[in-house]
Length: 261
Image: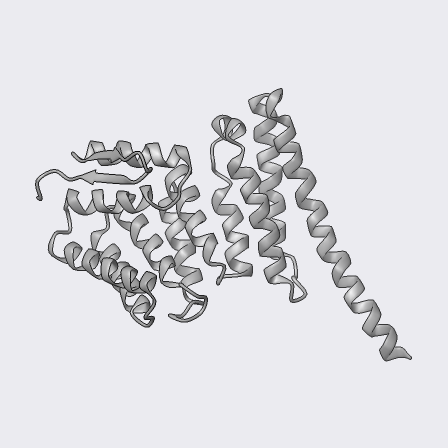
């Protein structure tokens, strides 16, 4: 009888704890969304500080083996936060790495998170060092086979290292690792990633300060199904490096490169 009662009570308590986490998160994010039309900058900044405290609390809260659930929940919260352009134009994106601190701590194999981390934290929050540090920590839990297509996480890291830190040597190693991991698979997508990553790594090893390599990497960003703001940023960076972007009627971006340096 006692065992039966424990079998019922324990899952119930776990659900209550997880529900409590949800109750902490969703009302706060909804307040941020609803407040954008009339709230002052001071009010919004207070809300951001409160959200940061809550994220720090979540990072320390026991998961009761519900790590993936918590990671998914926080990722949904992040999507609301990141997608609220009106508020982000006022407050910036400083909370982006705080979300991924929790997400990748709970589920370092959450592959989609690495791409969002790169875009939101390196590109928008201007914190590439923080994005790369979080990626490096999470990558310790990845392997060439788990999760599927894990090689992309190395490409995101290599992109950040080259475009935002100018660290061609570190970027070359990241792309070489991506090529090595992708080469384990025979499907066309993996083989293409293996080929292009290897070529990028080889080029960086020979031309660590090349504008051509930077344009090629911004081209990866441009063609990675990014939002409109990121697309415009990539085009600006390519043009600043001497390249040109031509978009075909079919929506395909073609890059005209300057003479190789």
